[in-house]
Image (tube, rainbow, N blue to C red; front, side, top):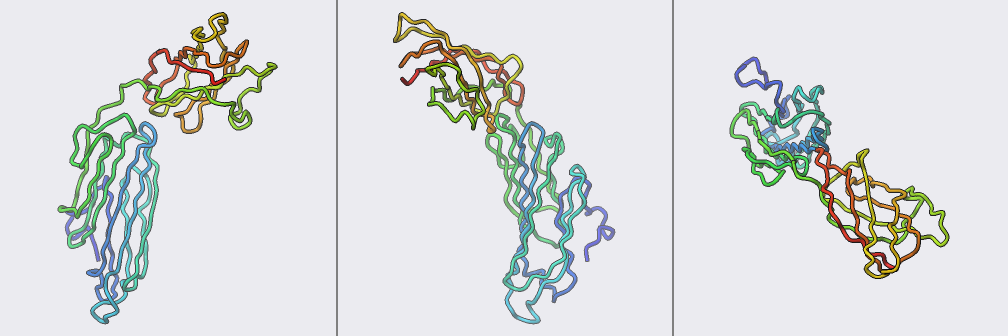
Length: 295
């Protein structure tokens, strides 16, 4: 039986994750259990985290009574106070050769960077621990006791102390988003993208698909201009007007719909865009990019 009252200096703190095995009997088959805990903290939006905890216990013993037999007991997953969730208790029986596993997912809104992650394991208990921390893209870790590169930190191993704390420092994203691909596309499904149907006959709409290096938002100051370069049709100068646009759910793909006065096949246009920002508030730089119509 585990009790923090026996040795208060070894009890979990409110900030800890902990895996505690309560063995209620079963021939002390605990020595045959291989236990593994995986904690994954992923920042899905600035200061919004999805935290998953996977627990697996494999009974490696055989049918060798009384040496190895059924494990019967309770596993307690203690959760840190900042998750504002009750601890989880799993009462179960594990036969030799069987596996017990549970997975739980939690959402935390706040600055996990300031809280770090800590894991507690009682004395004489053993757990293989995996920890993965993924900061929101464009941030990157500058210092940590995790193994890290760019915005990813990880740990694999058996904790050598009853409490292991993982911490990291990071550099914030101060870089403007940028366009990674831009091209004229065939007329997309108006119904799918909910764009405006053309009222011109013949249809002189121009559709462009723009890809960004990261998730973006469209601000109230959004502006797009298409400037005729007179590269092919030097006698026709027509600057198509933006009539509609949609940012797709991935927040990295923008579909633009322009209306030209006359069709111009193989013509080149300058595309200028402003009023787009990443989720950290960095605004895109106003630059000229070239679009070429297909027909």
